[in-house]
Length: 191
Figure 1 (cartoon, rainbow, N blue to C red):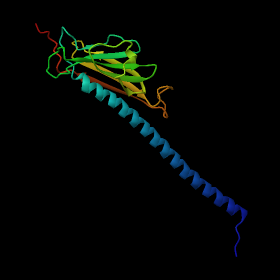
Figure 2 (tube, helix red, strand yellow):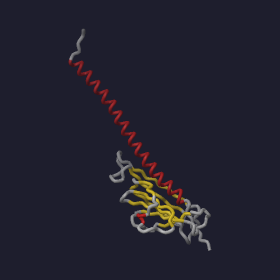
Figure 3 (spheres, helix red, strand yellow):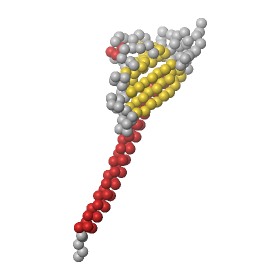
Figure 4 (spheres, one colour):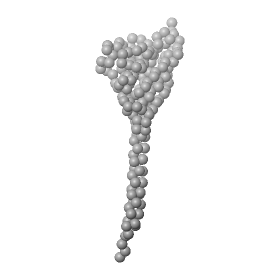
């Protein structure tokens, strides 16, 4: 019967340890890569949802050069605001049956809120019970109107956790930019 020497036992333990460490590193790398990809996908979906929501309702804007459909008139609690007159009764003309919607970005709470269908705004604005929070992880939102007021450029930056510094592997950030056309907005005023 042959016995193992101490040297053979040590070599076997070292080789076995290297094999276990290699497998553990592969598992850690895969888990880290999956988490990073999952977080990026989630913030991309969240930003895409906000942009798609804005596109759906801003595209229904109605107005002309005399009666602009969009406004960025400030409201307390909103760092970036987009007010839009929408063709609520879907007759293609701006009239008393149309309503204004608001997209409000608050940098303190990192939220993008949507306030649907009001003819007048209740005061205070933040007590409005009919609003919807579209996102809770936006770190920047910039809405700019075209010179002829028939499109809106939107730039939204989201982060996995907006309350801590963004742009790391564990806390990725993403920016989406788009131009939302308002096809029912005329750049010519009717007489």
